[in-house]
Length: 392
Ligand code: UD1
Ligand code: UDP
Image 1 (cartoon, rainbow, N blue to C red):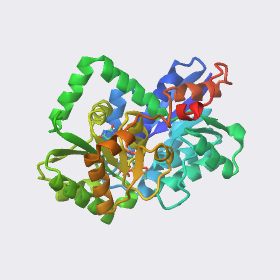
Image 2: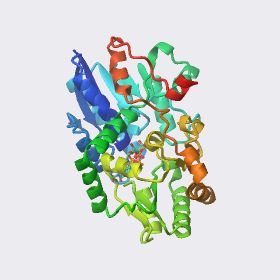
Image 3: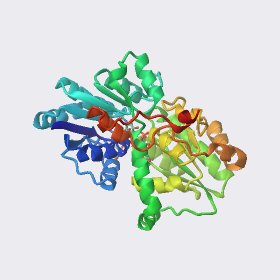
């Protein structure tokens, strides 16, 4: 039996790795252990609870306002005894965080095969997103199997000289996670009621007669002036449209939380709330009118739920939903953010055109494809192709 160590540390990695942990555990070919670095603490624990995952190892590295040196060096040092204890054949890492890079490097030092999930995303600007673009490129160099979400991610790796034999197009595992949660919310009244209760505990009630703008933001390259401009744009929306609710589950990073609380606290139609568990957050996204974010994962989920997304970044490594017309880049310019929101609030035809449900990022069986390919492709699952490409 092969030994697999799945390593993750932040909220989005946990959401995107949870369905893979389950699939690997179901497979009789694998002995699986989960190691969380806990680069995030409470935001990670929320996900572990929702998906009922009990880690075998917890490196507990998070410190308040940690810097990149802290995270990377602590993970590297604390992973060494874990690798010596379990001696895995394969290490699974996800995406582009410091956890991803440090865990890959630790595996490389011990000669262990690295399987990189959500490989191949690129902006081709090494400083944006920072440090994520560097993390994913550094990880790619020491990866054995690249599981890419989309055709363009595969093309990025081929351009960088990686062999086609190392690459499998799986779709993004976030759609596996999203489908699981969406099905639960659709089928189970109790789960919907619990989500509503959690929202009201967080201090927010959805009003059916008010449009809801859902906001999140946390990118390091927006810290300082960028976060301030985002707040100014939201203030302008809130005062221009008093009949619209803006709900903002604020990331716990003090570089975000402190500024946002100071600039937006006390505005009656801006609702600043704590980070939500994944089920409650998806319930909120299903019930919102549009999304304004700089998040990566939300750019992938919202199109699948038919929600238009304004992305507060200058570049994105996720071009597919922009091509599909449901995601628009607005950067952190106050007027661009404001007019992006205003256009969608006021122009019904534009909104209807943009708010179509598209699934360029996955079809919900990415994890089946990953496990099948690792086991020699016995199930013969075809690689992921978005429906729109299949139809054209
Ligand atoms: C990290 C990732 C980023 C990812 C994001 C997802 C790196 C360098 N950055 O950024 O790629 O998109 O997570 O959210 O890997 N904090 C808490 N509790 C928590 C989580 C964070 O208090 O549960 C606070 C702490 O003060 C912590 C700080 O946030 O020091 C920053 O966390 P960190 O993981 O360094 O950066 P993120 O901005 O979260
Ligand atoms: N999310 C959540 N609760 C929240 C905000 C976001 O569960 O209060 C989920 C969201 O659905 C998505 C992921 O967290 O799957 C995105 O995380 P984040 O924006 O922190 O990181 P990124 O995707 O930008 O790396």
